[in-house]
Figure 1: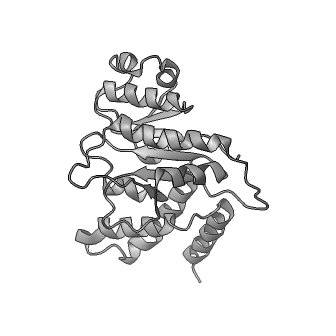
Figure 2: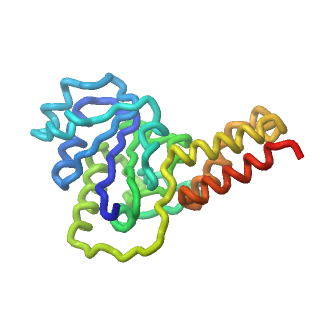
Length: 237
């Protein structure tokens, strides 16, 4: 489906008020699908409603997940927001570019935002297909959660007047769940062969492998084909 509105995913949000303000920002610009990953104070949170200024429908239908991987399992396009670009090996886009890409894309998209104090960590960023960031004053780069959401939501709202692109014979990118299965398949084959040794480098090696396998934007047929290759390699010669 072209032009499908993205889900807004808040990872480990700390304050109910900030969740409410994010919901308000979403509804201001026509976004209604809110997903929460391990909110610190649980959910529902009584502080969210008053802060949302009437965006009750967004809060009422908010879905809660234990992990970011679960929250974006059905998404073919995952954009992680951060002001830190150092060491990032994935495409980096502005909110406007991300909105245009989402509008033109086939399949479900998610815009992911980190916790108020710490933002997204390296493991969160490894799940994304692309990074969303904005030019910001390096001497004062503090952007609150609702501000970050409203930047992206506003850019999404601008796409609603754009003409629908023509796309022919393009398979949609694979959802996150299929990529997770492929990555797990790789790890299951590599682990007994000592690929992740030494243990001190295992986490970094796994993250590099994940970044490499989520970078190309495989469609579901390509993922299935690669899984077939791995299955063939598993068999005894």
